[in-house]
Image (cartoon, rainbow, N blue to C red):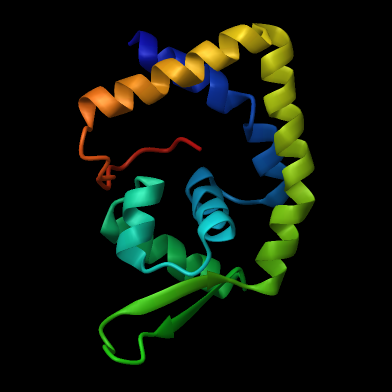
Amino acid sequence: MLLLQVRAAIIGRFRHVLKKTGLTEQQFRILRALHVRGTLEPRELCAICHISSPSLSGVLARMDTMGLVQRERHPDDQRRQHVSLSPRANQMFADVSEDMEAVYQELEAVLGPAFVDQMYAMCDTVLEVLNPSGEQTPVEDDGL
């Protein structure tokens, strides 16, 4: 329960920023992944964003309707898709990035830079030990 409480406390700091955008946490994770990594296939988004495939299908459909993503069929395999951000989504990400960075700065001010560095190092260690292959498995959760 302690890890869930810590996660909730940290994620809670970001919720007001998400409210400004009108995006859900899942939608923002997708937006961020596509902004950082560029065009991806849905299976890659599932793994990176920790969203199950059935959930991702619905979220991408809503984001497509909102004009936030563009989906194109793979030229060599019509069963596959490429998902990318629309210009509107890129602008939305740019608009919210400053607010997100302010939350990270606030966390560092409250917890202290040394503690934040230790926390990141410990998280990296946990991931290396529990997931030595480095493979990201899609898991349903609602974190950023």
